[in-house]
Image 1 (cartoon, rainbow, N blue to C red):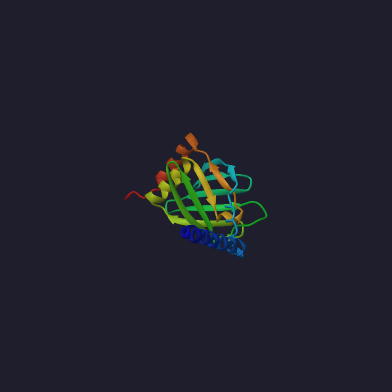
Image 2: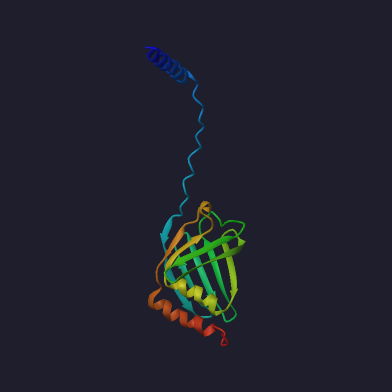
Length: 175
């Protein structure tokens, strides 16, 4: 009988203890704010234009943005131009390309808010970056928060192959 009384007292003590826990103040939990939504660049279909008059020039463009490539025996100049009233970033514009034939990144500096250029010495490596671009892919400009669209670059096809012969003529002979 004594066991039942002790057991009953134990059960009673447990119930009182649980009742106190239920009445205890709940800790205040601060939830972290949700992560910011990723900023994505608008993807716009671009088109090619080639010329080989005084220099080998190619342009991949949309109505808002274009990328010009000007090749001479000494250098390859890559310029991004923005045609809208909004300019390019003041601290340089990242030009980032990714395609099936390769990827590369350069930073162009601008003489104005609407044009930024990077000039590279003519070399096999610089020509290979141009060749990768001619095969098609996606060009991203600036950082995602800069509001610049990305360009879907189509493969240049036969016109690009003909134009690239102009580039090959300008390659240094010793490479």
